[in-house]
Figure 1 (cartoon, rainbow over the protein chains, first blue to last red):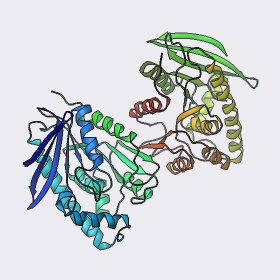
Figure 2 (cartoon, rainbow over the protein chains, first blue to last red):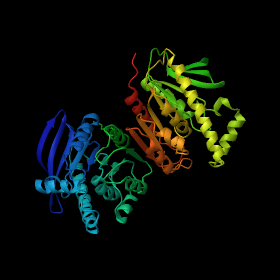
Figure 3 (cartoon, rainbow over the protein chains, first blue to last red):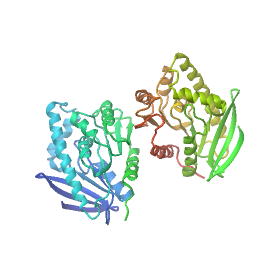
Figure 4 (cartoon, rainbow over the protein chains, first blue to last red):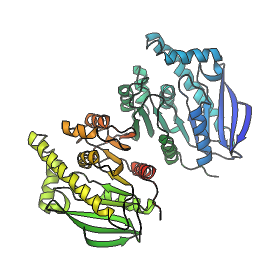
Amino acid sequence: MQFISEVSEMGVTERGFVLQVNGERVPGIVWAPEGAKGPRPVVLMGHGGTQHKRTEGILARARAMARHYAYATVAIDAPGHGDRVTPEQAAAARQARAGGGAGMTAERFSEMAARNAKAVAEWKAALDAVEGLDFVGKGPVGYWGVSMGTAMGVPFLAEEPRVQAAVLGLAGIHTEEFAAAARRITIPLMFMCQWNDEIAPREASLALYDEIASKEKSMHANPGGHMGIPPFEREQWEQFYLRHLGPATA
Amino acid sequence: MQFISEVSEMGVTERGFVLQVNGERVPGIVWAPEGAKGPRPVVLMGHGGTQHKRTEGILARARAMARHYAYATVAIDAPGHGDRVTPEQAAAARQARAGGGAGMTAERFSEMAARNAKAVAEWKAALDAVEGLDFVGKGPVGYWGVSMGTAMGVPFLAEEPRVQAAVLGLAGIHTEEFAAAARRITIPLMFMCQWNDEIAPREASLALYDEIASKEKSMHANPGGHMGIPPFEREQWEQFYLRHLGPATA
């Protein structure tokens, strides 16, 4: 884990880092309260498709978790996203998504599965790395990721026992392999569903919610499209993590 | 409004009252912080089928709303419930429900519609009455009612403009008249759905959620049966009311 930047703002320190995972350079960020020392809960944030590790929502949530609860937060660029592609490639991906994409062909499923497998290895490596930091340590671990963050999060949670609570949603089931991974998830969960989601149809999200094996899984459904989760949900995510990961102690 | 009892416990005063509505005696309770003076938000609590105005959940929520937020709470016995029936009639109703009931015949729909119309008039009368109390006044009004509390709450909210926010759920649509009432509801809403509800099937609850016209309507779905709403939802109801009805001020 190589640190490449550090800046503190309003009591929160943001450190940019680079990891080497299976021969690839994976850029990430870890946020923590300024001057933090000792282990604390950490939340891993998986961004959505065409987004990146420092997308507006992640930045806002990471700062809030540090300021309100003294938690640490980690985000990494997913395969094919953020600083792992050129600005031209990123723009083309956004355009393809806005245009509705090419549909879910067999080739696309196979690409997605390969990308997700890569992401799982990278999240494991990122968690290994931050557990070695004196201001994160081996504290309780949460995961947050909707849409592509769920596409990658479900296989990750299925095989990563260190994560104790997660927020998922805005994604359906595309393959039997994915459904099988969902059935291996047993940790407490919040699951977001947008009732008029134009990218992850309601029925597909409900089907994924249904497959997850967690005894505590609370679905929050709200009207509106894929990008329209209401702002009041953020507070409920924070309280969910606080309830399951506990307070940060000195 | 005739008061028939008053007791204070741990900072909360509980006053029993009786209203006369269309020739019937309607017993109710109003809770408020001990020594409360001046207007404050009030939440109307509609109990479930076979329950009554002082059922465990209502009592706990009323006390919490008074202690945490200095809110007032009102509950009344629904037609055919609580002190409006003999203990023998109440026991027979509970037994009928436990046995799965007689199914939704045309006769039962018609009985339900008549009972709901009666309940709407009684809630309006109860709200009129508590607005005249110096420790409630004409503050913001919320409604809470799931299952039968929604069967009665939907027609009530459809025609009572004083209610500004409501928690509903665990109920489906049985008649076109009920669906039409749901489409007239536009206030902010939380809607509870139990994923394995043996009384209000999931699909029926989702259909009711879908019909409600509110721009803000947040459905919280959790695994388990009709009586199994998880305890952590209570805190989220309180925050929902606080967000929409505002704090009580001196």
